[in-house]
Length: 83
Image (cartoon, rainbow, N blue to C red; front, side, top):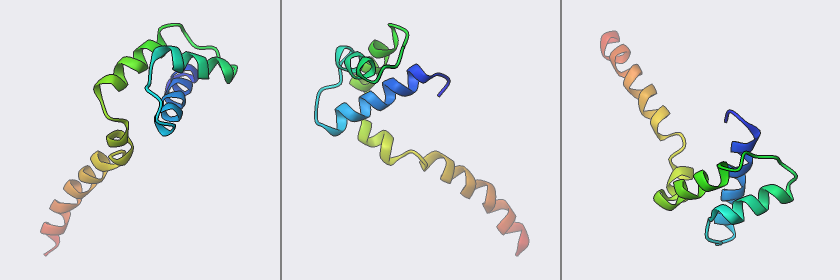
């Protein structure tokens, strides 16, 4: 994350998801305000639009999937050459 505002909006979205509450810009903004975090006014709406289009559970469960695949692909030629 490049800013505290982005992190705050991410955490707010996770809180809403965990509580089974629809993720909206207004609800993200309310949580961020309650945490006393200052964010640019466009962050809550950007995060709400993002989570309309993608499934948070998929994002959480696949966090390391891309990195693990790259590590296996990089190790394969080394293992083949060693034999």
